[in-house]
Amino acid sequence: MRCHRNTVRSTQQSSGLPTTSTHRKFDMFLARIAGTITSTIKHDAYASTKLMIVQPITPDGDDTGDSLVAVDTVGTGVGEQVLVIRQGVAAAQVLHIDRPPIRSVIVGVVDEIQVA
Image 1 (tube, rainbow, N blue to C red):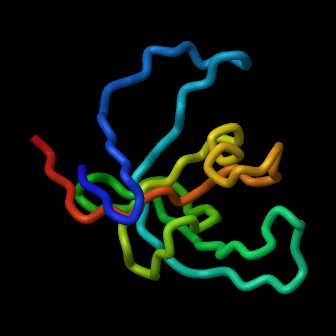
Image 2: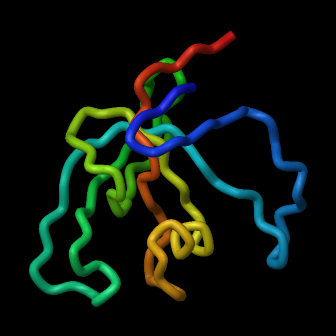
């Protein structure tokens, strides 16, 4: 998997970490930008952010699961395939905000997917 705008490399191997309250598996998935959200009144953590509706997809591009809202950190557009992280601590690190009310963040635009 190759991405542009941000350097992101992904493997399909499990981290091996137990999924408990103290050690949570890092959640990154492929998605397609399905739409945008405009909001004039929002929490301060969302100031100067672009909110997108993302639809999780398989490597073949088929929809899988429910769509969700994610903060765009890379400048995406509707129809693009992206990498999304869905974990609060990771979102805080990417956005450089302490304890934001944000769970999902777009961290890369996918140029190509090659499945062996």
